Length: 174
Image (cartoon, rainbow, N blue to C red):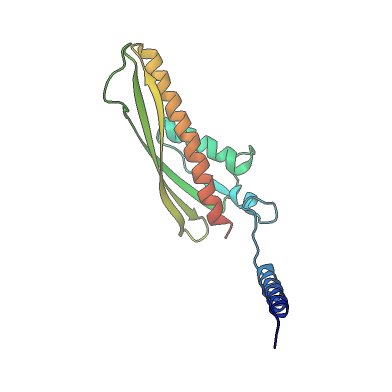
């Protein structure tokens, strides 16, 4: 007959065995950083060309993406992928009531639609739609209002570039 100490000892041995087997099973799992030099993601992102823009906000987005993809080296001469981006932006009032000094809070919503194609096969590798919202204040001064909207558009383009870069990096690294 087993005593209490004998049963507890068996439980510890069994628990140690189960933990040991689970560690062996976990050794087979691999986690690779998305932007590591070993994964080749940086080289693949550097081989993405971006189509010419139709608007100023698209140009801001394109410039930021080129920098993010290549690390400041510019567009590739012979790209493996081609990215087509369109941006639709809408400025609207964020608050229903005006504040006392004629200042209102405004919201700029930018939606980017993108398609990533393989240049060799002409097939669509990935496509998507991403939306960001930025805020700015509008005053009684016209120039300040235009500049605030432009700054909000630039912020939206920078945020969209970061999101699209992450999306395309996850696709080309597969």
